[in-house]
Amino acid sequence: MRPLKKNDKIVIIVAVVILIFAGVGVAMYQSPQPTTNLNSNIPSEKSYDVIWTLQNGTLNTISEFAGKKTPYQGTVRISEDNVKSITFNLSWTDDRMTFMKRMGLDSLTLEVSMPDGIYYFTETSTSAQITGAGTISHTIIKDIIPPDTPIEAADEEDAQVKLEDQSYFDDSWTDKDISINVSVQIGELRILKKLRDQGNDFELKITYQFYDGVLKEDTNINTGDDFGISPEDPWAEQEVPPYISMIINTGCGRYV
Image (cartoon, rainbow, N blue to C red; front, side, top):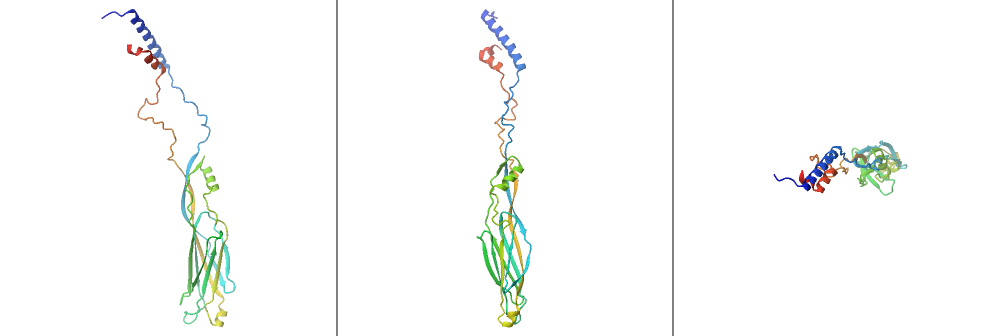
């Protein structure tokens, strides 16, 4: 084995010293703590989807009398928002018929006007022979589709406030007067019987459908915490100590 030259000995000694300091540095090395996020105290907003379901509602039955000189006139109100449709079912029985209950049949007319002045109808039907029963059924449909845009809010309570404040509800029919008129046309032609027939009792049933909104938090939104580090690599988050880099850069690594 050839003896080492003086310069080689000096290089080896320097390398050993550097390795000793490097070992001490590695033992004492601590990963730098992440910088505190100045915005960490600011609450992040969550996203809430608005789920709409179609619900059914019913108003109290109207039991009244429609006279030949005094038609029935009244109003009803619906308290819900986002009303999609309203169905009016009018029924009656003619109590005065002649000639084997085939003559003198009365006709009733139902008139409805919605509070927005856009939707209304007038429909007439005649009592049936023998039974004297009569019916009118009509549905007013308002083709509304509530928006499904998600709501950004700090919490569910805040989202509920935004849901009620923003344009998620159609209230053009809400708690407003719906005008109803029921009139009768006497079918009896003979004067005496016509004078005796003053009109008809009737029943009016009103049902409706409306959209009800429910909030649901969207938990599928990416939080942004994934930086592409594979959880299977335990060294992925560790940093190379600066002392190791120093050894490599000085070229002394070839003597180790």
